[in-house]
Length: 194
Image (cartoon, rainbow, N blue to C red; front, side, top):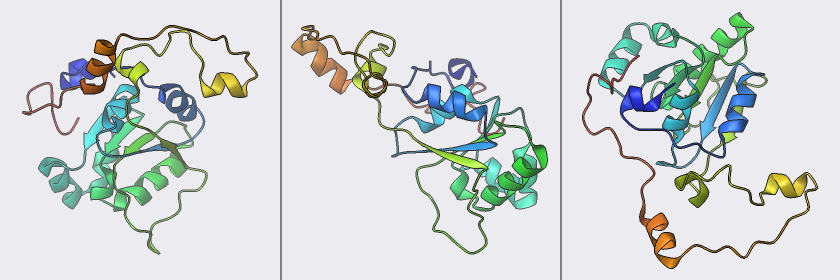
């Protein structure tokens, strides 16, 4: 999904993107987990075909009437802040079971409700993917810049040393720079339920 068109913020590619895209091809749903403000919603939007922001009054009202209608939409359907309506876990699990299609849902949220006897584990239906805070390479848009990553080291690549360093001003700017700005006021392009 074009995040700039949807919420007014251009998407910066993330290191987790390849894992999200690949996992959506093989399981019914993924759960993007990570600390507040690390970009889970933006990553979810980038990979989603449709979305609903479950922490909005409109979505809460719809969930009170019939929460299943909020599951409807183009797949993968982003269920952002799913934990605000805990029954979504079991509803999404049932929808995955009845569909037999991979990549049905992306669930995002910073908090996970405590386990209870009613909520199913989601085994074989949900895969959890951990998203971290934005790295310097992600902020600078340099994910494709040649370098050495853990994946390279584990695959047996032979690292080539580099003496390239960034000027101090670039390092300070990178530390202080925000990755994106939040959508302050809902507009036609920043809607809570879609």
